[in-house]
Length: 329
Ligand code: UT7
Image 1 (cartoon, protein in one colour):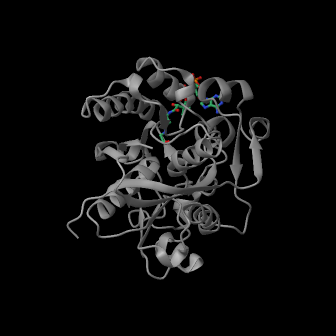
Image 2 (cartoon, protein in one colour):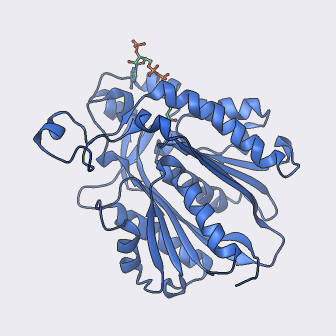
């Protein structure tokens, strides 16, 4: 138990639904345009989970792929962490449902609600359990079915979100690589800048909450945008400065995919080339806690992330929360 391990990701997986919603589809639903959505967000299309399927269906697919990639059996897992704000049920946790689906009965299971920073929070927690030697194999999933909490009459939000799941297997290694630095932060004063007001214990579901559309995600986009651009750059700089590194040392930066303008802003401030900031927001929209693990999986499959690369991941979102991880791949 006193051993200290370096913490690495040894398997990845991702799953997105088949149904595509294009900007042209949205033009028929609300007063918007393809041109507005692309120029203000960078989004061209997003995915929507078919009726009858749920959070656990999508996370199961991503999790199985990550386990196979890591060469693990479900029974090898010590813990399952699911980052989500759109679980199947208010209780129990979606991680318990996933544990049962996988047959991972040796694993502790918990959900984590940190908005779009959920994956970074969960990976940081996994790092703590692995580095001290308490656990050997942890599955971390970022999954959201945001189309189920999207108000399809609100053009300010419905053009932004999509469904998806990404999963990683986290293990220890004696090799000189893995997580170098991590940081998670919150400022609850901004809680109501991005939230779902109805359906919880403050405003339980009733006819009035339904009539007032309180079960849908509400966002003050301008305020969240300002928070994002300032904190994401500061987080990235802190992660690398604390290790005596410079922005140009980074081989890849996986940023939460909320808006292409936020990604471009951060990239330009750090004076880094566009190739170092992969994106999937154009194809998937904002999938909240799933954006970073899906992006990571895509980059690995495409062979663009290689052993020894210095990679940073930064998330930000509801809470308000934000957080980052620096790792040598
Ligand atoms: O993932 C969690 C973190 N989330 C974020 O980081 C999101 C951060 N915020 C944003 O990405 C942006 O604020 C949005 C994409 C949500 C909005 O972009 P914006 O450039 O801040 O637009 P805005 O809200 O200032 O609205 C500008 C105009 C308004 O019209 P008026 O008042 O100038 O006449 C809006 O009504 O654009 C209008 N508008 C739209 N027009 C066409 C808002 N949404 C739409 C739309 N189509 N879908």
